[in-house]
Length: 105
Image (cartoon, rainbow, N blue to C red):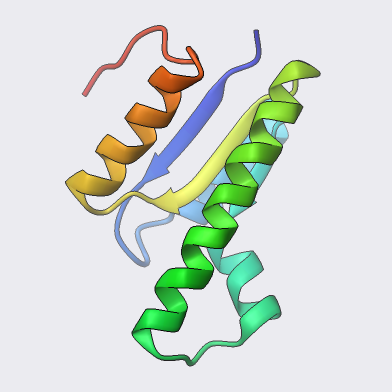
């Protein structure tokens, strides 16, 4: 089965640069929130609107990732996962779809 990679880190820490290199080396499909949010919605919006749009894209990315995995395509989530709640949420999603084989910190 193809792997899912989660790129965690703060703004400006090199996540996207690393994710691009990883995608190239693993022939993986990369989901980058920044690369979708800004072209679709612009850079400035109310926090509530931003959160709604972010949740919509995350849901679409997860659904798409499931389809890609069925075709044995590795997937990279370049989201940041800054908060513990975000990391726990993605772990719950992995467990729901029985995608998690191991977790190391």
